[in-house]
Length: 301
Image 1 (cartoon, rainbow, N blue to C red):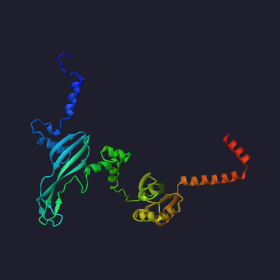
Image 2 (cartoon, one colour):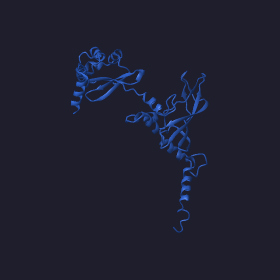
Image 3 (spheres, one colour):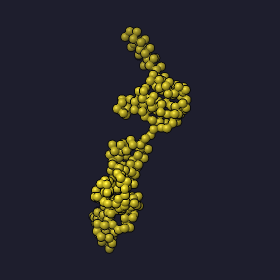
Image 4 (cartoon, rainbow, N blue to C red):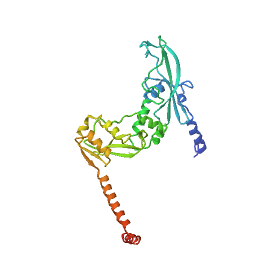
C-alpha cells in the first residue's frame, strides 16, 4: 500500500517481533533506571507470585526462563539454641528455587540472610514459601501432588512443571493415603509388583464401592495380620472376599472372625476350568494317536 513505508515488508515485521522478545521485564518501564524495576512493578510481581511478604529486587526474562530476585525484610528472629531474639546479620547466601511455572520455567533467586546470636549460634531466617532443605516452593510441590489425581505418568507431570519424573514421584511419596476405616465388604488379592523390594504385593479394595483402599508391600500372612490388626473397625467387616490362597483365609480367621469369607467367582470358575482340562487331557492320553487326530478333526469342523 502507498504511504505504508516498510510495514508491508515481512522481513521488517519479523525484526520488530524479534526486538520485542529481547526486551527484559526490568527495562519495560522507561522512567526507571536501567537494571531496576519500579515500585509499581514490584508490587504487581509480588502479588502475582503470592510473595507479598518478600521484597522483589529484580525480574529478568532469560531465554525461556523467568528469574525473580527477592529477599525477605530484616527483622528479629528467635535463636533456636538459646531462645533469645536477634537481628544481627552474619552473612548472605544466594539460593535458586523452582516455583510454579508462569508459562515458562520460573526460578526464584532468594538472598537468604543468616543471623548471629549473642550465644554464637548462626541460623538462617525463616520463610513461609520454602520448606527446610527444599529447592522447590511449597506450592510447586502441592501442584505436583495434585496433578497425580489425573491418570497420567510421572514423566508427563514432571515435564509440565519442569522437573524430572523421579522428582515428581519423590514428592508424591510424601503423601500418606492410609485409610482410617475398613469397609463392610473388603476384598484382597495379590499382584506382581516391586513395592518394598517384594515380587508380589497385595491390593485391598472396597468391593461394594469398587474403590482401591490401599496397596500393601507384600502378601505374607504375618504382614497382613499386623496391618489389619491396627484398625478398630475390623469388627465391622461383614464380608471378606479373597481367592483360595490359604494365607488370606488365615488372615480372615485371625482378624475378621465375624466376617463371612467369600471366594471370588473368577477363581472358582478358573478352578473348575482347570479341573475339566485335567480330565480332558487324561482321557485324551488314553486314546491312540489315530483317534486323537480323528476327534481333533471332528471338533474343528
